[in-house]
Image (tube, rainbow, N blue to C red; front, side, top):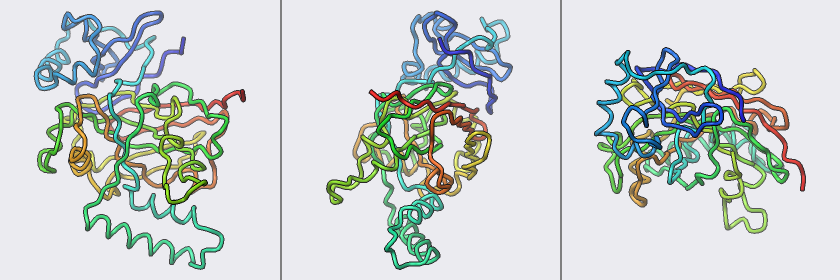
Length: 331
């Protein structure tokens, strides 16, 4: 049994989470700023209600959630002693790559060949031009992640014995409420219930295929080991987030700040990413749209994850997560 987690504050009158008492099944919880929790399955007389099922009825239940948050007589319980799980189990995970200008420039410089004749300054200027062209041509880069990679915001992260360069990528994640297919940019945010925190771990050594460069990237291998996406702790409703494109994304490694960037640095905003993904796929309630990682990853610092490392990640108004890295025992 994992130990209980600390309560981390968030913006707005309530947030959603998935929690459990010792030796009890997880439940969908209405989390209050006071540090209290309401079991929504009990409140709605729907035992076994999940956060994803709630999102499937988001427009119907959102007013009731506000009422419960303001009802002092509702059956609240203290947060203390509860375990915090990933806030939901999505059907689909859409991930945005190369979406932070400074991050992409840093990675390009870090991955430069020793034989590259360009100076660092020339390389940075060249990739900056590429970023500007991508933004002008309106070409986001979105790929698919596996729900099985998701773990709780305070769970240990097992570093696979094959992962040579495990790295962190703290990201803002949008949570879908209404189904979305071929949604215009102007309507895309109407399909977003709220926001949460995701740490999209990546093994840099396996991002690119070594056996055949023409194949390109291998996101299955590099990003989808079990537990490689710590999620949460909370889903904060969109109405409580004044501007999701002006939030501070901060990750500390063993207490030292590594990522500290605003979502303003995104090339493509949330509405654009949701709309773009919906051109091809049908987004479903509870699905996640990860918006990409800002600058400050391990490749930039020349310091990758190893056994015993502790990552503290936070995004303004969304709470905080803490995960410890544990090396897999070789088989």
